[in-house]
Image (cartoon, rainbow, N blue to C red; front, side):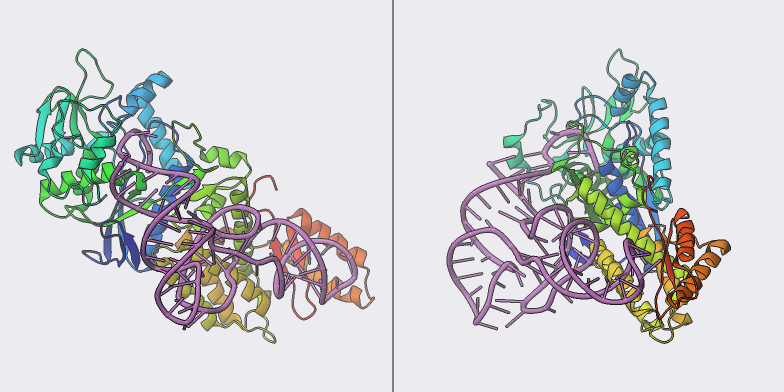
Amino acid sequence: MKLYNTLTRSVEEIKPLAAPKVTIYTCGPTVYDYPHIGNWFTFIRYDLLVRALKANGLGPVWVMNITDVGHLVSDADDGEDKLEKGARREGKTAWDVAKFYGDYFVEGLKRLNISAPNFLPKATEHIAEQIELIKTLEEKGFTYVIDDGVYYDTSKFEGYEALARLDLDDQQAGARVAFNAQKHNSSDFALWKFSPKGQKRDMEWDSPWGKGFPGWHIECSAMSKKYLGDTLDIHAGGIDHLPVHHTNEIAQSEAATGKRFANYWMHTNHVLIDGDKISKSLGNGITLEDIEKQGYSLEVLRVLVLQSHYRTQSKLNDASLLSAYARLTDLQKFAQLCFQPNVVNEKYGRFSVEDVEYARQDLLNAMNDDLATPKVMSMLSEYDRNIRRDWLKDQAAFKALRELIEFVDDLLGLSLTNQSDLTKEQRELIQKEDMLWRKAKNGEASFADVDEIKKKLMSHHIVVSNFNDSKPLWLRTGTGRKED
RNA sequence: GGCGCCGUGGCGGAGUGGUUACGCGGAGGUCUGCAAAACCUUUUACGCCGGUUCAAUUCCGGCCGGUGCCUCCA
């Protein structure tokens, strides 16, 4: 399986350190507010990576952190802690806020059919590990203390600019951030922040340097080390984290252990809404509930994610949602074929078990090519069309089709196999309709009777197609949209 | 100012040195008792100017336009 590695800026074959195990760390949410649709896009993309690895026989061990303290309103270590700010906004404690949005996030993972991460560690439950790591960095001479906290001296770390290919000297010229005069370098960042004098924070802990709370970046280094060891296989995150957060993670972890932190870095690009990126400052953050309010199921959102590549910016608007909805409906119709033995036509059928198995390998190959999900989607559309047009050859092909759909579900997480079979009663109705239809064509029955049964089926959201040379096929309508 | 990315048909969105992406929408058709559904055909593109090449949307250079990061942010 190949993946674009930001470290080398090239597509590389994934070679886990201890295959078949593959360790993955992904940056999770800061739980101070509802995640917006862009956050969920990224989490779905993590899920697709994990699913692809599994399809290749690898056993991912996936850690996604939950940041419930220390993420300041500004990465420059100025400003307030987001959790404390959220708490004031809602008149609760920071702990209440973290609990509420943390639970909401975990629930969201389930609603979106995102594979359960093996670990969802919270920053507040790993304060000791973070303090330990800072102590190690202190012993090795990478830290210094100023008025408001313990800082990491980025100039001491060889290769600090490597991942993001930064040019710090030139960046300073255009920096708009007020420079903390006590910091040695503008890129230095806080490992531990002291509680403001005379102020009691909801969240604060004792440390060797004084009462306070951890900086945002240290949690990822501490928790990935605890759960996955010094070196992990794949680290994924949003592209916005490249220059600061991920760069700092590397600096912390590698300075502490002397080993490489992660072998592969995967960065997901953003989704734009009406041409703008989603951000708090623009106030255009759409939530899952907003999508559902428009009548779309969350599978529609997943199709939208799949339709664009993770390294390109995708767009969210009414048209793209509608397009994704239509595509999901098509895929669901495709999946419904695996309940229909009538799709086997021994006389005219051309699609063999070999063809179906080839299709499966073809899909996996596309996924293995740097998660080429748009290609996977187009291939599925083609297989759907081909099978409908050419029919299946025999029962073996029918069985293989069922397995193909299950494979696609495991790979993409679209819950296509949830397309339930018909009831016995519905099946009998279809059979009767087909029989009457054939009779009516010979003048042996009335079309009015045929139409009556069709109407009945329609009330079950079932549409029947009759064929001269084949048994009938059915499909369900409106399964991707609530209002249907 | 520094570091990047992108510019594809009505829309979304892939990809490629010479061959249909795919989906949505529009148009026409086949099948059909009608209507759906299904299927077929069609709509036909690669910002501009040069260069390389037998051949460029696809490689190189320049220009124009858009956009991301260097603040919050997936």
